[in-house]
Length: 101
Image 1 (cartoon, one colour):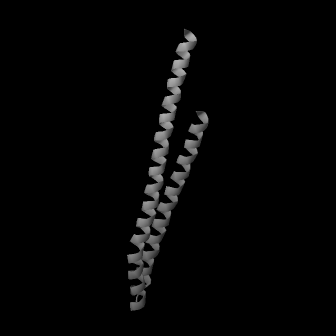
Image 2: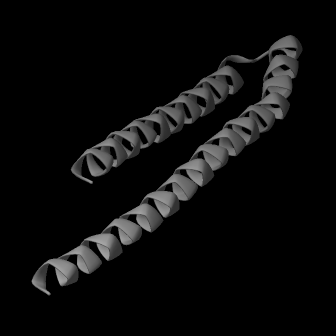
Image 3: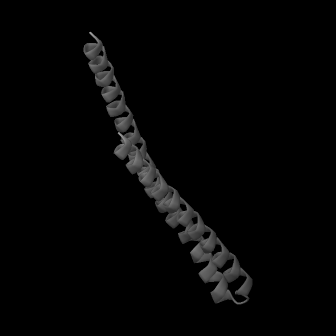
């Protein structure tokens, strides 16, 4: 049981790190986009920035979908672990009752 909990902590830490990295990537992309608008004084720079604006939401949406999928897998894993833990607790309780009798 302790091993399973330790593994869950590792998974949670990894997902938290991944989420933080994703947030940083999005912030970096947004900052680059803002800077490209500031630098684009000519028409070609403005067109490139406009294209970047259109592509940015798709990339963010894709990463958001990946993150949602990972979190759903993690939620299911936690539910399965909880069910296994409850089953172990039940077995342990019935074993303790048998030992007392």
